[in-house]
Image 1: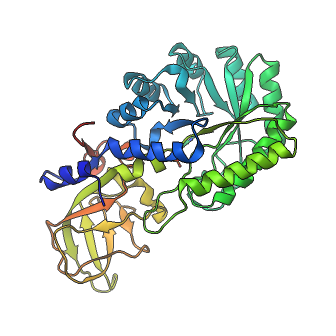
Image 2: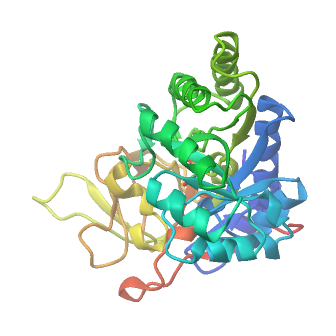
Image 3: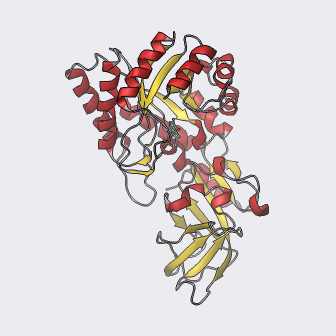
Length: 380
Ligand SMILES: *Cc1c(COP(=O)(O)O)cnc(C)c1O
């Protein structure tokens, strides 16, 4: 089930915790998205999901573009061989000078969502291509953005017009329907809204950037890329048939869906204990937790599958917790986790589908526990 590259890393004992990462799997996932959405769709990998150079090199080699948020990410992409023309600065939160610095690196594409940012862009990068980010309904997302980004439709129309007035090139509309977004219909609804906005702003042949959000089957099956592509295509065709726009250039910014299945996080059990009166379950403490890469277990938003490679006996419920002295460093309390009843300190435990939003989220050394080491598969 795991790739040969991941199996060979895990077959060799080494100090834990570490993230085994196979860029070849990310490459396969990228190809699957391409196959579903068609060669005309442009894929910009969202670097924040996993900025590991070997992953960026593998995707640049496939011709991917990149969604970047900072000068640090721009530098990583360029070092991996990306053409700056294929980078899109997707973070509307830019401090003074940041857009100009990105432009000096060759970046010409920016996402915006406020009048303040449009004006700053016009001053720093005259003539830049801009997409306006729309705030959309994110029903079905396990990790939504809670309104941090995006403009309402009327404002988005005004921002596209303002961009043109300020000498920018209004290219189209984007949104992010929330990460781990499991409902194809949520994309279809957002697409209809985005193309109505583009049409009202006078863009006849807009870019339609679908953002990220494509889900991963962590503990249960999710719809595949084909089902999302079908929903998107239906909404695009309806908008064209309805006269909102004439034609659409599709872009996608997947992060999680490309890289999550490329990683396995191996940890070691530090202690299995029972504390009567606290919980009827065993507490299993690992050498990895919220601060060594498992940030997405906050609120138990993402439920990684857990396996114990060395034991085969009957399993029972437990609470899974991290190693630090922080009360929030509990991985799963409500999410059911059944581990072998004979589990003991020193056993290794694997958390699967952990390639996305893990190593990039690890703290530098909270409570004396270092950041997450990454071990990349051979041949990458
Ligand atoms: C994080 C992010 C993405 C990637 O989202 P996923 O849910 O990982 O696919 C794409 N676009 C933007 C602007 C983002 O901030």
